[in-house]
Length: 402
Ligand SMILES: Cc1ncc(COP(=O)(O)O)c(C=O)c1O
Image (cartoon, rainbow, N blue to C red; front, top):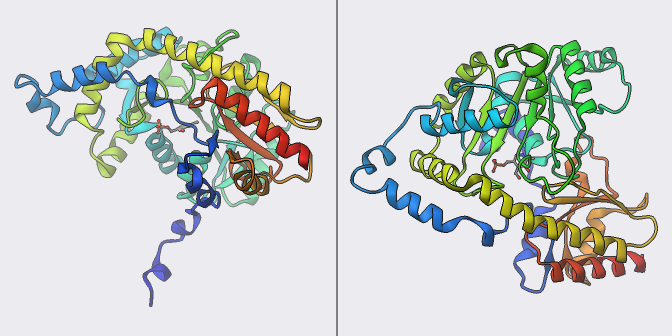
């Protein structure tokens, strides 16, 4: 008997991504890669972190910095975050905040908290691959969250019952989503809240990219809109997942959840069972750096990423053949391409790596129903403007060749 035969059923839902093999090639120096969705390491506030870690390790502070700490998270950081959320229109206190090891951990915990096998999670077609990976372990069904159509709540409900449970959550990244770069406007956010109210389900607002807006008018967080409706965060069903990964550092793994206290208390129990708490010294360092330079640092990130976004949109307009369409994101790190029907993003990637040496992520993996073969995701966050021009020219040439 092999151990694989006695893995729990949930293990069968965790599958390695089919594109990972192809993406291994990305380390080769002549590949122009637009595949990663990561911050440019040249933009990390490394000096500020060096100072913060050195300070945390001085004799006066090291006993705390190297010690176990509370599961809720480092209180000065939670207080900073409560103020920060206030500036976004989300009045809340430190008791409404749990620090997590990246927002990915928050997605895992929220899946664990809400999804019994057969329950339905509403997600976009496409949606963040990592959210599907996190929820999959809890064996849900997925249904398409499409807030711009008039699909009746009853229809969602019937589909969820047929799948063996009920709708428990609607998950979305409302600002500059991964993978599409698109933003849900205020009307769409209000419609989502109305839908969630009727279905009596949670709304998971993934705000990983929210700070990275390059133009247009900021839209209030879904949680802010719900607090405005209900008067207090304690009455809300929106659970906000924030992250320092795209602004300060992904390697330190510091994210946060903002939620009613009753939900936070339950998530704290989960954290105690899973990893006790997030790294103490990393939380101390993030707090120090955030209070010193968060706003100015984000402003400079915006300037750099805005130029790269502009360069990519201009290069796409110059080089893409007729029949290829793409999004025009107001922030974030991604542009989403739709190829003519019948074309396959994965096959295109294989050809691209063989010939023009340009990498991107084929879109199908972002669709819970396995559709979307004719889509792909491009990231501009780590590419210079010259590289973007060259990469899009090569990709255009490949697409023209058919
Ligand atoms: C939409 C979205 N949510 C969450 C995450 C997880 O980020 P982290 O765990 O580093 O906060 C990512 C990372 O790429 C993301 O794109």
